[in-house]
Image 1 (cartoon, protein in one colour):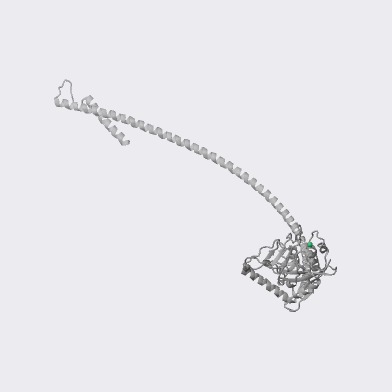
Image 2 (cartoon, rainbow, N blue to C red; image 1 turned 45 degrees about the horizontal axis):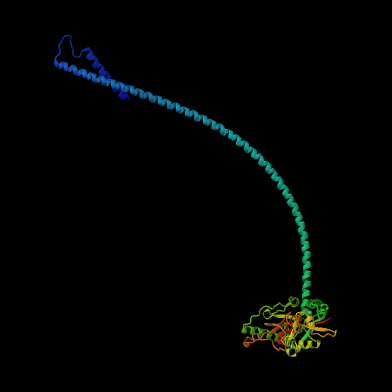
Length: 434
Ligand SMILES: [Zn+2]
């Protein structure tokens, strides 16, 4: 800008000087009335043109100068405006900073106030908590003292109970020992002693005798038949345990043989229909713990009544099918019952002591009688057309079976018949009176 201004000033000075020269005529010393030569005239003309051109340039330069001045003025105004804006912004920022500082200070005061309040509240709560803790500790101490007292009492009670339990256990052991001695005293054939001497051992235990008596009364038929009623008041006088090694071995052998026969013949023994009297089974097994009954052969405990004179022979020689009475409704076999009243029908009726045998019986695969079987001496065939299928092992005559008498007479008691004496073992002889 500065160089531009100097150049413009120099040009303007030069033009101004040339103009003045032309006006004054001092350069060519022109006098009035003097005629000019053509060369001089052209020179003057050229000077005049040059002067006009310079004048035009001067005018243009002046215009440029004005524009530059306007431009400079505008820039100055613009700069001033920016400075003012900057100052305004600075003032606004200062105002904001001041406001923020005030707000921050206010908040700081509020925060401090709240912090103080929180501290005070925490102190109060802490104090309360300490008080509660003290109370809880006092309560816990009191409860602990009570619990200790209770524990002491319970320990004393436990000690007493333990002492009582020991006494009871000792008493039970003594009772069991006594019962075992009663049950197994002289059970020589099972223990391998006195093997060849069949004998009877009285059960000298009132408790067990009472169980047998209850069984005899409970299994008595409760029908209208007057022949049944006496057994409901039966009084058991003695119970004798039978010991007979030979019979036992014979019975075991028959049991194994029957199992083998069933396996060979493919016999699957179904459930007894209806099931045998469970009260009778459970009563005996309750005190004869060693007793095992072979369920797959329907091994049951059943009653057998007979004349007094036959009992000793059964005990010594076992059941003998060849001595069975003739005229039996379901064959000439050995009859058993689960109702004491039915067995009682075969006992003596002279008012004296009577005997009944409680026996193990292997029913095996039974034949269910559909009516009287006449003079049958052996159990029926399983299949009349095929002898290879073998024979049933027993006959069961259920209640309601036609008994050969004119209707409505039917079988009132359930009866079990075997045709092989080795299928039964006499366990107990029950001596009673009615
Ligand atoms: Zn009866």
